[in-house]
Length: 349
Image 1 (cartoon, rainbow, N blue to C red):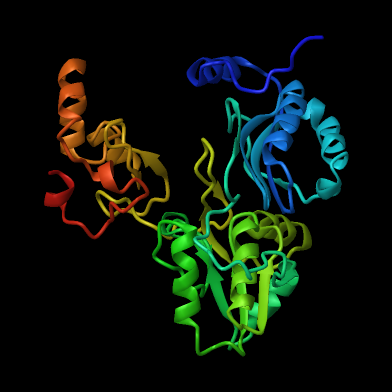
Image 2 (tube, one colour):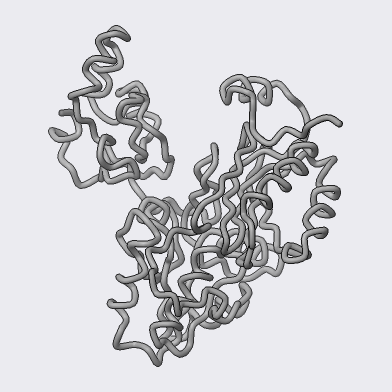
């Protein structure tokens, strides 16, 4: 009997080149489900073997508390993939968030990792129950709730996500990780426990846990946007509802964003012109995630600063040596802590 493959064996760059030339139509989607998984490693190996045969690509996290997946599936195998999900009791009928803008080239390999949690939260309280979540609301109810004067709307994403797009009037925590945001929002709104709290994120996984956390902290009227921004955009368009989302929805794949609202709400971190295109600095020793317009991309050859640009011009051996001591914008902060309000002098150091 042939042993099933349980890990990717193809170099990512090779696979990227192969997929670029492949004309197979693919569907990019995400889903999550909180559940009690007794043996995450066994479950991980089972779904890898099953999904690999169907040509699934993407990034998946499995833990004792559930599964979180961002993947792409060949269109011709989509029904077979859904059937495979339905064979798993806690995934039967799970919501699949289909990407709004999609060319099918969002992932190049299948990577499934077992982690302590599917969303790192920093919560050590054993009495916390992630399944005691807030009430799910659809796009129509979300619009109604957020039209009410006293409703508090909270964005549960990180600063580099909300910077390029967010719902009008939302509280935007200036954080780099989800776990940072939980104590901040609980403290910020500790005197508003009787008010309606509405939470949202990209696909629902973070705001579902956050809504459970807020209930755990004594908040009485907690709601979460079912399916997140992705599903909201779909419902708003289909039902002709007012789209309250402004700008781009940041996504964690090769696209880095999909257009939801027509407005551009952020600026190039280098020149300050309106722009919402995230890139990583071309200097791999830096690799900071930041916003860069096409003019600055040409001026800095896709780097975040003159320092990185000059570094990239050095011979490879010299770069290897300098990496040991040089500090770049992304050396300590990789997620857009490189901000527009820095002076041009600092940008070019």
